[in-house]
Image (tube, rainbow, N blue to C red):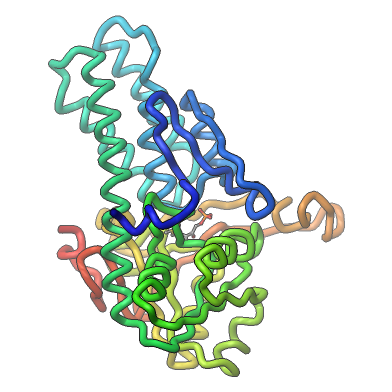
Length: 347
Ligand code: MRU
């Protein structure tokens, strides 16, 4: 049994003929599942943050390719490849920052590249197998990250986290939160401070919801409380996830992560980044090359549909920031805990 089986919700599920995702925009009020039968539905679900978090985006996109290629009545390989190009492009155009999306799409394309001699129905089966494999691999990577990371935590530790790098963000138990679950299941008494994570509150809505379900002691703070919490409370470490880690170790993650890294450095608190190998992008040598998604101004000018800033307010709203490698104490991956990024992580 994988630890993700202990959770009482499923972020992503292949039902046998379509993809089912937990609609995260409706949490924590309602647990509503979204049935996706076509690529457009999957692409919208990713774009609208119904399914979000780097590894979960990659897995959903892999199944998006499957539903995009099924039931198409394609006559030959040329038609099949043309459709595949369209499906992959539709999914690739959703969110630019999490490399897991492009990593998963590349794997799906390779399946067709390597099996061009097969019947089209067989190609569809192979695509489905690959998507299921990507999902299963992610569960196992989360488990290992959880185990390696939990070794860093002691009984009585207090951890600060940002955004949601939990089961809702992956196919398994999560990366940063996977570590917290694992430590908790090992019997360690831990306490967590969760940043609310403006503008769309993944910390308040999702991280708190997840941790509460397991009975983990979690305290919600507004983002601007982090410095005080580090000064006044005993924060033993910060653990966050990643959307893309460049070859030099710079980390793109939810906007506000960089703030935390600077604060942790000042307060001499270890700052850990938990991420599977699918989040590393060795094609980029520096974090400044990472494309950062810009979000709609309404997410900042409005508060759940109600305007809170004057009409015509200029807004700057990057979804992610880049934390320089020098502020990262260590990377917790499925291969272990490393203080530098190098090609070994990729292996
Ligand atoms: O915009 P989101 O909610 O997709 O951003 C998610 C994050 O920044 C997570 O920390 C990251 O994807 C890691 S998830 C294991």
